[in-house]
Amino acid sequence: MFSRVLIANRGEIALRVIRACRELGIETVAIFSEADRGAQYLDLADQAICVGPAKSIESYLRFDRVIAAAEVSGADAIHPGYGFLAENAEFNEVCRSCNFEFIGPSPEAMQKLGDKNTAREMAVAAGVPVVPGSDGLLESEAEALAAARKIGFPVLIKATAGGGGKGMRVAMDEASLQSSLSQAQTEAKAAFGNGGVYLERYVDRPRHVEVQIISDQFGNVVHLHERDCSVQRRHQKLIEESPSPRLPEATRKAMCDAAVRMIKQANYHNAATVEFIVDQNDQFYFIEVNARIQVEHPVSEMISGIDLIKSQILVASGQPLPFQQADVKPFGAAIECRINAEDPDKNFQPCPGRIEKMYIPGGLGVRVDSHAHPGYNVPPYYDSMIAKIIVHRPTREQAIECMLRSLRELRITGIKTTASFHETVLRQPEFAQGTVDTKWVERDLLPRLK
Image (cartoon, rainbow, N blue to C red; front, side, top):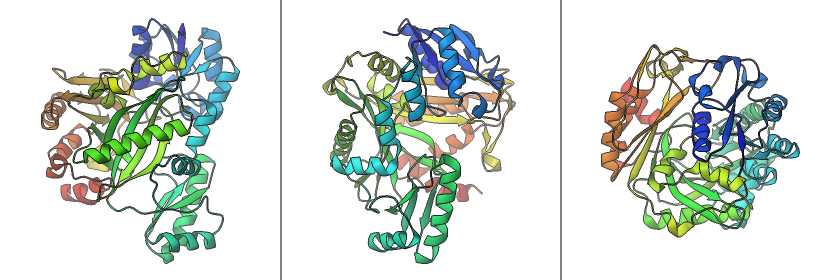
């Protein structure tokens, strides 16, 4: 087992790793930028080291400064959390070459799965359903047009690197394909340094359902069932839940089995999420693999009783998983709401600033993961999420009521948050019926609220 872990991240996920390490008897090293200096969670780590100015490109994204912090602190492993360097195969390799264990998959597995086109090919090899699309990356407009005619319009243009909706465009017909292709390539190149794109058939009104995986180095690949992440805005998840509502049991089982095959095909060890879209006929298709822990991992933890961060650390230290698939018996329903420092009434404009008062909800079945506190200054340089409220109750109906109560209890003054918007979503009949899709918020709900 490791003796000291450096956390190459900040905020809520850094605190989450600190807590898991403490329960395992492992010392922790927290890094921070000048913008995060004085954050209370840093006091819970055994050491805290500044790695640079506020901008992440000069601090959290600097390989040399993160590695230097690991060296001077005497850490023997690095946990990347999510975001920043979590899916950077080069950083992964640098960590290992400097004799620090990277708490995640191998650089090779990360690189293969990080490229969506390569991951798609691996899915096909593993017998995992994929959306009909182009054969590899597109080299020219003529090739794109030929592929689109074969697939049938509308088509989705997707960047092979990165995520978050960048480098993604929908072309409804031949006339729009040229401009959409150019826009997607330009955006992908600017965002990821890789302008490669490919085509897929556009699936109308899909649900986004993903499967949580944890695997060790001894051939044990275990799924912790699925999460539904269909409540989104601009490709960003807002609410996640498990189990996925209205998903036929046969589809659920087939999807989880497909996710396991995908991870085995990649020779992947550690935590991963295999993401799918589900069409209106309940047919599922592979999208991508997130080669890291995800923001919504507490949803899977609540229904399974398994600590995913601890499991990550155990696997990375060379230990086998202490459970097998037959031991994972999901119970009840869990829902997570991401509370962001944004103003829903102003097109979700970020609202950095000082939190004056903050009252956290509690009670049976309520979990709040947050690094924020009264007096905390929400910096403008990073993701705007300041808390996650997760509830777990025996039924989905009870979980919804528990979440509504928790959102009403939450009190944050000094800045605007998205808590009221989440409450509005939960009260909609479409959410109660489980019929939302990934475009529902923008297509139906926001116009309804104007």
